[in-house]
Structures are given as C-alpha cells and as structure tokens.
Amino acid sequence: PAAPQTAGNSRDAFTSSFGVLAATLGSAVGLGNIWKFPYVTGANGGASFLVVYVLATLLVGLPVMIAEIMLGRKAKADAVTTLRTLAPAGQPWWLIGGFGVIAAFLIMSFYSEVAAWVFAYVFKALRGDILSSDPAVTSAAFGALISDPLQSLLWQWAVLLMIGGILLMGVAKGIEAVTKKLMPVLFLLLLVICARSLMLPGAMAGLSFLFTPDWSKITGEVVLVAMGLAFFKLSIGMGTMMTYGSYFRDDQNVPATTLRVMSADLFVSMLAGIAIFPAVFSFGFKPEAGPSLLFITIPAVFASMPMGHLFMVLFFVLAAVAATGAMLSILEVPVSVMAGRLGVSRKKATLVNLLLLALIGATCALSNSLLADVKPFGMTFFDLFDYISSYILMPLGGIFICLFVAWVWGKHNMAAALSNDGRLANGKVVAGLYVLLKFVTPLLILLVMLKGLGLL
Ligand code: PFF
Image 1 (spheres, rainbow, N blue to C red):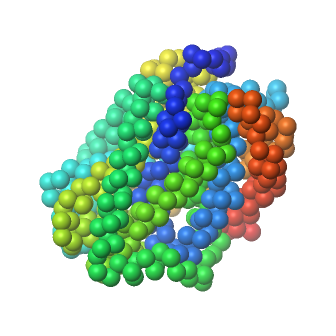
Image 2: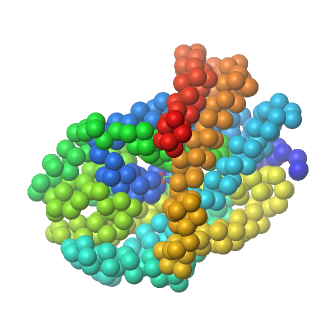
Image 3: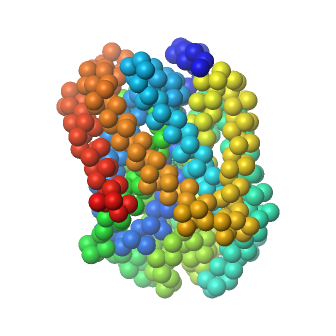
C-alpha cells in the first residue's frame, strides 16, 4: 500500500468555519430529510416514531458522529488510512473504512437514482407535466418515468456527472464553495414552502399526526427503522464523517459543531414534515404512501393549492439542492480512499469511481424496468442496497467505531483529539462521550439490530 497522505498545510481542506458547517450540514441534509424522513414517519405511526428517532439520534447518532469527525481530524487522511494510522500496528480496524467504501457505493447507487427522479421532476414541474390533483394521474406520470429504462439511466448519469464535476474542483473550491451557496438557499425555500403549507385549511390535522404519539405502533422493527434513519441522516457508520472530519480546521470545536449540525438536520426534517403533512391532510391524501409519497402524493397536493405550480417547482428545486450536498459527501469517501491509498490523482480517482458507479448504479436505475423481476433476497437491487446499508453496514460500522475509540484508542487520546489548537476539551464532555461510546451506544445498536432483524 502507498504511504499515508501527509498531514500538512498543503492538503486540500475546508477553509472557514462557515465552510465546515455548510459542507457537514450539506452531507447530513438531503433526500433523507425530504424523501425518507416524511415517508418512514408517515408509514410508522407519525409522532411516536419521531420520538424514537430523536432518541436514536441523541444516544447513537451524536456520539458516533463526534467520534468519526474526531478521528478524521486527528489523522487528516481518508477513512482507511485514518484507521490504519490510529490503530495499533497489525490490527485490522481499517476494515471499517473498507466497508465504508462498499456502503458508499451501495448508497450512492440508489440515492443517485432518487436524485435522478428529483432532477427530472424539476423539469416536469416547470413544464406543468405533473400538475394534476388526481393521484391516479401523478402516479401514472411517476410510473412512466421509473419504468422507462433509458430515462432512468440518463437522468442518473447526468446527476453523477454533475457531482463528479463538483468533486473534480476539489474540497475547498468544489465541495465547500458549492455547499456554502446551496445551504442558505435550502433553508429559504423550505421556510417559504412551510409557510404555504401551514396557511392551508385543515393544516392542524397534519401537525397533530406529526406531533401526537401512538405508542402502539412501536415494534422492534420500527425501532430498527428509526435507528437506521438516524445513521443515514447523519451520514455516519461508513466513513463519510471521518472523511469530512479530515478536512476540519484544527481550531474547530468538534462536539459543538457536531451538535449544531445534528440540531440543524433535525430542524430541517421537522420543517420538511411541517411542509408536507399539513398539505397532505388538508387535501385528504394518506400519509402512508411509502417511497412514492414525494413523487405521487406531493405533486397532487401542490396541484390542489392556489399557486401550486410555482410551489411545486420550488419544492423539487429544494429537494435537488439537498440531494447535491449529500451526494458530494457519499462519493468523496471512495474518491479520497482511492487517491490516498493508491496514490492516484484526485482527478483519476473521481473518474474511475464515477465509471464504477455508472455501472453499479444502473442496477438501481433499472430496478423498476428491465431488472424489476431480479430480486436477490426477495428485494429489487434498489431496495436491497437501501436495506443492507441502513440496517446492516452503517449500524455495524457504528458499533466498531465505538469499540475502537473507547476500548482501543482510549480516553486519553480522545481528550487530546477533542482539544482544539491547544485549548483543552471540556472534561465533562469527554467523560460523558467516553461512557456513551464504551458501553451505551454500541450495546444499544447491537440490541436494536438483533431485535429488529428478528435474531433476538
Ligand atoms: N445524510 C444524507 C441524507 O439524509 O440524505 C444521506 C447520506 C449522505 C447517507 C452521506 C450517507 C452518507 F455517507
């Protein structure tokens, strides 16, 4: 293997505090908030699911996210090299990074296809193609898009090319510069759409669905779904936050920044819920539509409201913006590993990974057409890749990150790595995080996984 990248001033990294925040939040916020969060919340009981999800975010998500960013910033290298450098010689902890690369490919494969639909919908919304308040019509339009192999593939490749283009510009000039512009736009659009949704008659029914718990809906499987969502949402358990952590500035307070990103991400999910559910209820639609909620129910909802055409366009632009920041961070994992380990240029690494993804991602693009009947483990490639990453690879990655930090690396190293520029980290924060990472978080993940997968 090639020599690890040296940590020096010459390494491309985020340049400002706002840039760090925008890029990291850009990774967390994405289709997870706007596509996944509303439909899984809708399908799993609303408010009661929300409570479990918030608990999973605090007890599992936050500690793992801090740990990952801390490790990345310490080693200032890609995910594989980071664990190789920090672990005792000969111990295979770098495999966490290796599995992260696999998870990145699986996630990017289906994620870029959902993004492909979103980008296609921006154009369809502009042209008024999906402007019908009849779900049968919007459903037919969605069906026509996803069952057309050529359209599905071409939109996905267009999305991949755009992401690759941004990554080619580098970490500071590409990722940081783009997310700094996109994040404010995202908040603005979301607030406008929320205001519109809340002004609809009958909006309260949607809010009470989102905020009144029904505890009977909670099962082991639902808890696993909530935890999987927490991992997916915060881009953790697969090396993404480790990679971004390696671009963090040394004067950055890691726990504080992480807390800010986590809170802002939750806030965006809430806003997405507030934008979507009141409108869904107001026009008498069902919240349990599943993955197609965004593409079938939402256009019908917008078509039902005054000025709906405009708001529909804004909504899909918002989703496209959100998806972009997240995809940059997913693809950055294999790109940085390839550049760091094999010593190839960033340009070559980006191109090779794009090419690989165009091939592997095609299995997801074609999951509703040519490959609809190919179902390993009873699922299409699209569903399978989502399932394996959210419910197996990311939680396992999370467990091993906890074990490595607390049991191998130790409290002393943690305290040093959490300090910034000579300012000591808060002792209580370090102690609390240590206890969580050593016992609470890994055990919780393990129990939820075993119970949710029916093994307990
Ligand atoms: N956090 C992103 C979202 O919620 O849309 C998805 C994601 C990004 C998952 C990056 C994993 C990842 F590494």
